[in-house]
Image (cartoon, rainbow, N blue to C red):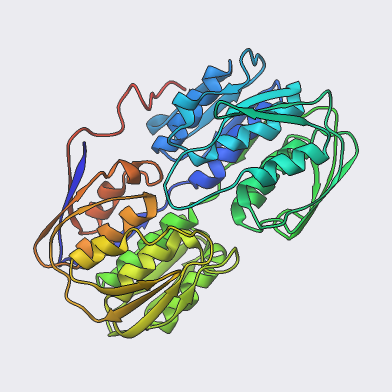
Length: 434
C-alpha cells in the first residue's frame, strides 16, 4: 500500500498547474450514455475515480478510450451498444458517483440497475432524492440486494422540488429530463460549477436547458441527443488546495489553469487571514503569505458558500494562525476524521458535534498518520509540509481518487515529498490509446 513521506520546512515557490475537475468529469462521462454518437471530453484528470467510471461504462457495453500524455487528457466515449445497463457493485463500491448513471440509463433505454454508492466514509449521501424525482417523472423503482432498479417506457416532464440541495441529485435528474417527454422544472437545485459544466455538455449535445448554475432549472425534453466535444472545467478543489499549500508554507505560488470566479468563498477567507491572493491572469492566481496568519471562523455551505471539500485543508491552515478559529461543518455529519490525525501532529483542536475549535499557532511535529478520506488526506499533506521532521502518510490511495500526480506537482514547486510503493498510473490503468 502506497505511502507519502514528507519533510516539512520548504516554502512552495513557482507555478503549479490545476487539472480538470473530477466532479465535472464524472457526470459528463455519464452524460455520454444519453446518445449513440461519440462524445469527446478534454481536460480529463488522471485519477482513480475516472478509471472506475471507465470500467463502469465499458461493463455496460460502451467503447471508452481513456487517453493521457500525448492525448492531452482526452477521452472518447461511444455508448451506441448498451448491452448490460447495470452498475455492478464490484466496480462502483469505491466511488460515490455511481448513482449518476441512473437517470441517463432510464432516459435512454428505459431501464437501469445500479448498486448503491460507495466512496469516502464522510457521511450519508442519500439517494432518495434521485428516486423521488425519477418516480415523479414516471419511473417505477424497486430496491433489493443492495441494488436499485428503475424502469420507464419514456420519462415524462415533471415539477421537482429538491427537499435538500444535492449536487449529484441535480445532475442525475437534469440528465434524465433532457430526454423526457415535455417540460421539467427543477427547483432548489445545486448551483455548483460542476452542474453548470454538465449542462454545458448536454446543451452542446442538443439538450434544451435554461437556468443551469441557478437554483431553478427548466428543461424542454427532446427525442434524441447527438455527439459533442467538451472541455472539462478546472478543478476548483485542487486549485483551492494549492492556494492553501502556498499560504501554509509561507510561499510564493502561482496557481495556473484555474477559474478564480469559482474560488470566491475561499479567497475571501484567505484574505481575512492575512494571505495575499492576486488574480494575475484570467486563469491564474498568485498566493503569498509572508506575514503572520490570523484566526477566522468558517462554516461550510452549498455553493457559492465555503465548500465542504475544502474544510479539512482550511483546518490545517488554521492550526498555523494566531488565535482561535471555529470551523462548522454543515454538509456532512462525519467529516472531522482528520482531526485526530492533526492532533497526533501537535494541533490543538476540540470537536463538539459539527463544530471544531482550532487554537493556534501550534508547532506541528512529524508523525505516522493515516488518511481516512480524499480531502482529509490533502489536509495531512498540508500539515506535514510545515511539520518538524519527516511525516509518513499511510493509505494515500484516497488521494489518488481525486488528485492527479499530487506529489509530483508539489515536488515541482519545492515540497520535499516522495511516494513509497507502487505508482498509480501504469499503462494498464491509463493507456495512451487515442
